[in-house]
Length: 185
Image 1 (tube, rainbow, N blue to C red):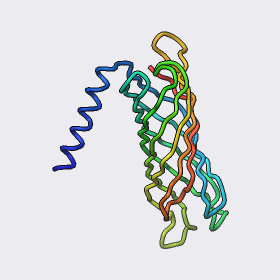
Image 2 (image 1 turned 180 degrees about the horizontal axis):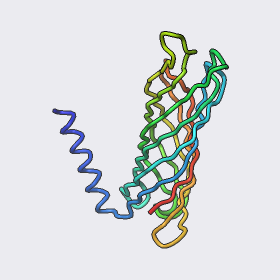
Image 3 (image 1 turned 90 degrees about the horizontal axis):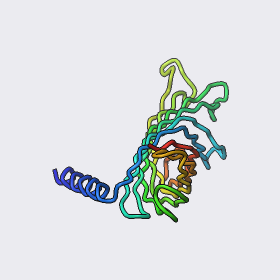
Image 4 (image 1 turned 90 degrees about the vertical axis):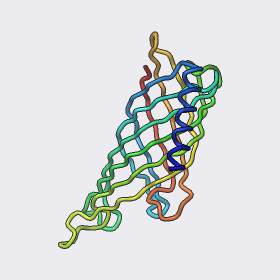
């Protein structure tokens, strides 16, 4: 009950602050993940996209919340004759500092990324388990760098890169990077 009340207060505060500052932006576009695993000494790719909403807080500060979904395949590290299929669904909230103004120019973001990983054929199939699956949560903290470029009245393009590190043991991916371009409305 107490957590629900705190959550409602935070959401109400965010919406109140954004309604005062204006220039909130909805964005959608493709992105690619580069996930590095120090255990395997490999980088795995996944492709997908994101839907984001940016709340303006002050003239040069905003909060961006992105929902992401990515899918990738690669050979299994235990038995390369099998293909591992990774589905990563996540959310990335971040604070952004805009060097010029929110609707035009460069920004630096600080935030985190929470993803749910579902990997089919994570271990080689056996008769008792023909499609072994790993389900796990990934969490990392990182920085993003990007630009908001106006392309026409009310529309912007946002190329960006995010680099995050997962400080927790037992995670599949230690380093996480996302590259993308979103169209803002």
